[in-house]
Image (cartoon, rainbow, N blue to C red):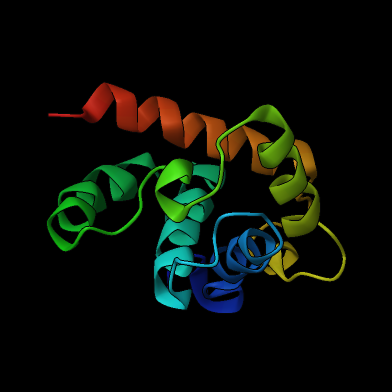
Length: 122
């Protein structure tokens, strides 16, 4: 829970979880799986790519989602926009990790994570 620093804790990860629960197809993913994916999105949003790279082998070994589609969500632009809007909204706590969070930043983090995983598939 400490990836966002002392004040942010896992706020971004839980904002992603909460947004995923509003998206069709994610009902089969467990809370912890959605939060695990949210940790990677949070790390991507904060530019902690070394941490993402360090975690990917563990995620693969434990079969944790490291791609949006693995959460059950359809990884379309529309779905990503919905998740981004919800996660960056004032109802969520992503702001504790990044006080200047926007839907665009969340979208860029999700898309950046997809690209990063593509480059690091083995």
